[in-house]
Length: 100
Image 1 (cartoon, rainbow, N blue to C red):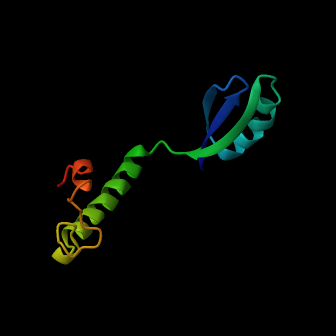
Image 2 (image 1 turned 90 degrees about the horizontal axis):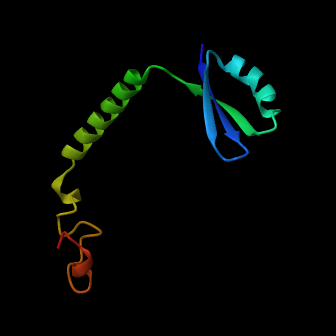
Image 3 (image 1 turned 135 degrees about the vertical axis):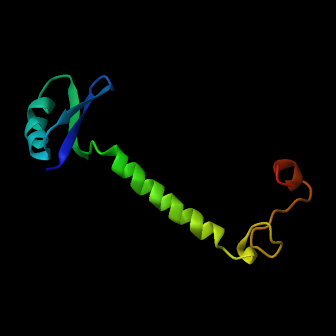
């Protein structure tokens, strides 16, 4: 079952959130909440309590990205003078670049 987070925007501009046990329950509660005079809008978004799993997925993704970068051939490295977009360290660019 997908858990839900209701985001409520007040007329004053402030926002409130409410954790609900299911998306169905959240959708049922949207209309009564929006009908209140000081509420501008309410929306339900899916939520997860499993932040550790998401963190592990991101860690795995960045690990793969690091491997790709480390295995790039030298000719595709910005320090190579033939690399497209090589730094122009002549005046006035030199003043604007810390790398020069």
